Image (cartoon, rainbow, N blue to C red; front, side, top):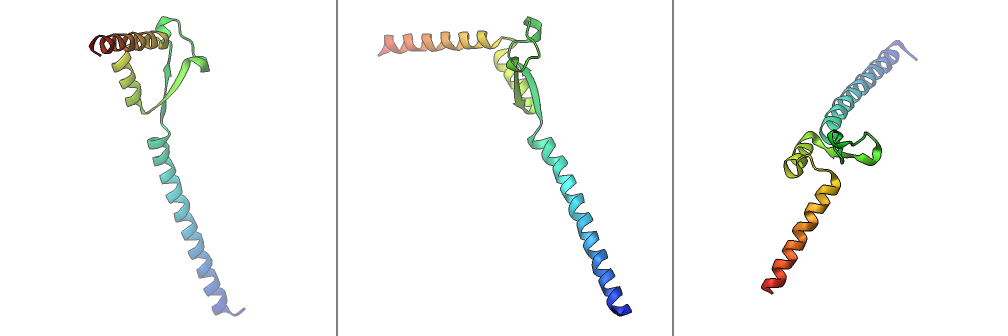
Length: 103
């Protein structure tokens, strides 16, 4: 290999290494963005800790983004899952009775 060929080969290797560093940097940046946007979950207790709930996996629900957690509490307050189901069943029974009276 001549000196000219060696310099050309070395230049190609530096270019490849630079492109690889840029690719890795791009992947790391996008990985951070993805983890912040798409994989940010918050834990929600189905039975609130204030009402005797635990941190057991059967009592936890993963909600995407903190806003969903806030929306849950706007809708259902600090009710337990059983209380929410009971409330929704009452609403369904009332709706059914109203439809039966009108229909």
